[in-house]
Length: 211
Length: 211
Picture (cartoon, chains in turn brown, purple):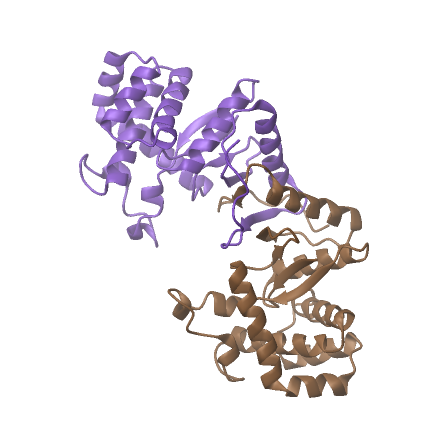
């Protein structure tokens, strides 16, 4: 089982979740896990953790903060209906925000719940149980901190190797997904003990469109 | 021709230069180029470039600053004796500092010049031409800035793809070096358009020693 840490705010994580969705179809298991970029990058947390997303009231802070908190809690509410429901909700919300370029807000969350085929009454009830969903989220953010997650997507392999994997191109093609996943795993398990491969800032222009 | 940006301060760059040295033996061409971590990470340069290593007097600033400036200028002095002399000096100085755990100072620089078989009188004369060596260095640091180098080693492939490549294990074995270099190039040229693969901070313990 590979853990996949993601934040709904992040287009790279979206592509990571789509990659995992393709690979799941042939039996490679992934577990969806949340990591908060707003909490992780918060200035108050530079020295030690003092600002927690899970302690923030709804309707306060930046729109990124409000949208990501609400989306995480809704994602946990969807997960109450099982793993497949959780994947369907996660993909629907990601596509609404990063493919259809919508806003990460309550409307998008409700639309994603519908298009994912969730039981809507139960979803509403589970989401209304705010304290339980915040507890779910807080436990996951604590787990991310243990791993040392700093960005999304981060994959944690069954062997314990964990890394941020940022790529620009979306694929839903099985062979392409296999190839990109194999490359990532090869980097993490190479005898070179690679810590980082990161492009220089001034990249040459992109050669073409999306796959 | 692949450009290899390095700083004598950096053990990752040392391993990168050793990797390139192995690959040069079978005809893969690399060009040694300097990048200053002290200048790149200087607080005064956060918004725009205002602090330049090449404008600092000898004997001022931190020991890192003094040592790296002197080593860069010495490296340019060695380069006046040709490409092979430059590689020999660079490797000798790197090994003295990062393998034999010496200090990056004038003594180490003179010893490296000797063990590299440089013409010592000419080396001294070229190093004494401080203004010319500073001009050489400044031009290179400007070139690094154009590429967007932010750490070492950074390799710039003939195709223009450029990235920081940080790995923990030293190799001087040809097949291993080939494999690690092929993996790096595959990441940079993958259709995924990978921007970053970077391990999470809390790595599992290393399994063993050096290759």
